[in-house]
Image 1 (cartoon, rainbow, N blue to C red):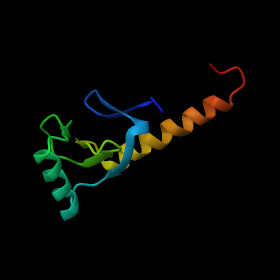
Image 2: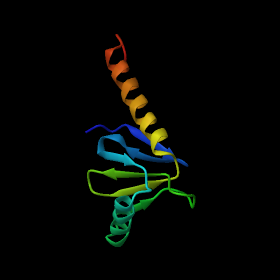
Image 3: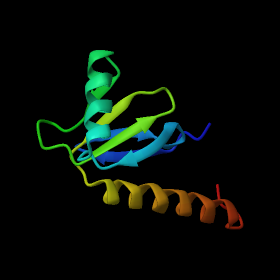
Image 4: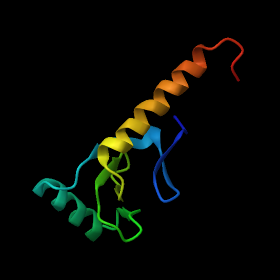
Length: 94
């Protein structure tokens, strides 16, 4: 399993290998998903009291709320993946 951490804001991180989706919270299905997760105690609120700007869904069916835009988190995810791939290809890399 990939153990790289993804910064989701305010010092909070998620293991990238566990992420299934990074979505915006505005749609009705996402609001229902958030409420269902809250009722089933699978909701992790990492917003530090700020407005929810992204919802991260994990392979364990946990729902993580972040105050960072979904696009920003997605860019961090892709950039981290690209960096890791480049590091693998570099001769003499640790």
